[in-house]
Length: 293
Image 1 (cartoon, one colour):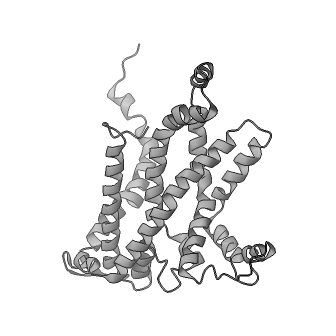
Image 2 (cartoon, one colour; image 1 turned 135 degrees about the vertical axis):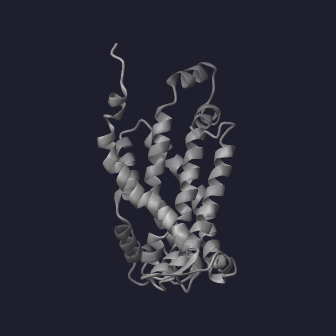
Image 3 (cartoon, one colour; image 1 turned 90 degrees about the horizontal axis):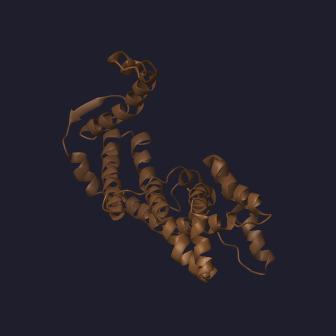
């Protein structure tokens, strides 16, 4: 066998160089630039004086920051467990050996390929009072009510969470479905020989086999939920008032509407620290080696 030389090791470098330069410019460099901005009074046009930790201190005493962080945490707590359970249920349904298997898989996954602007427009159209599809359906089944889905804080949260679930559950369903199809048939055959019921097979075989992918989905969903932004911006714009404004929307307002980029960068890094801590906790809970799969 021919021995590889250092020239052979360097041969892939030209092919990787373009990606490496783009990755440094658009991912690595903004990370350190954002950290630098958080220590300055920084407008959209120019850098001003160095102020140290002032932005971080001001953020921690900002009631709007804590309100937005509370809204985001509420969204995470309500949407994440619902998303995991719903994705598992849909995956089990899509894994059934029926004539509707292809229909289930397609109809559950198709919403996840739509853009956020499309799903937001559909949501606004369906949730309008007096003319919206949802209110007309409620009245068609005999409910004499005219809910203002996007103008009432509690109903606005219900609407946002429902739209987010409908839009994104397909991706998680695919992950569960892939894991389901990887479970060895021999386990079910052996359980059937031992006289186990389908319910016992689910609790003793299916669910334990899905735990690793479930942990991964939980981690991804927590991270994604903390970054919720576009659908809320387009559907409620953080309203009524600021009752549905998440932390990313508040960062966006401070950075690109009030042009206080240093303050926005400080909030971004505080959110980054929260996500980092949550990720480490979840990885530690995933096992002694911190492996999700």
